Image 1: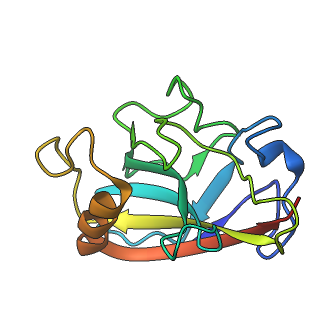
Image 2: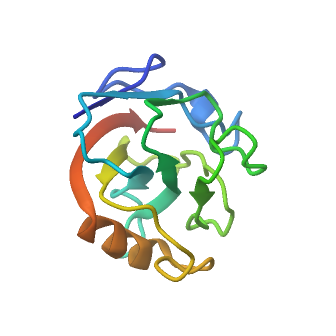
Image 3: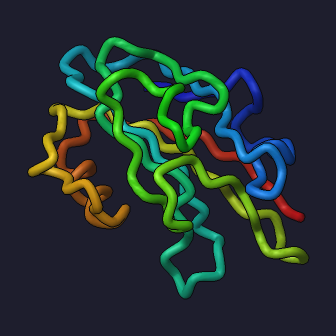
Length: 159
């Protein structure tokens, strides 16, 4: 499985429009070569370099993306959810919002890694599987247990 964006290449420096204090909009994402038995997808954006004592920072986590889609548009992570396909659910990010939370590395830090991970899943999750107020750690554990395949795309940003 492959994940890419028409807006940046793997390993590239991200545009400031993805920053929380600028446009704060998620990039368009496209995926290909999907396993045949996929029931849904999830996408997460994580900054493992955030100064949190080791946990990193979850900027975005969306799941129950339909099995027949192969892309998300620019700003799919809007807080309204209007740019996501029907049935998709956004978890609270580490900033406490059900939306994409843009990059915001501390000024002076070396460039942080922003890792987008696409999960091909063997199920569609109910509210009993992933509770509405689930933390990203719990959802990640559950999602990883149902992962058939995954792909990653990494961008870098420093301020």
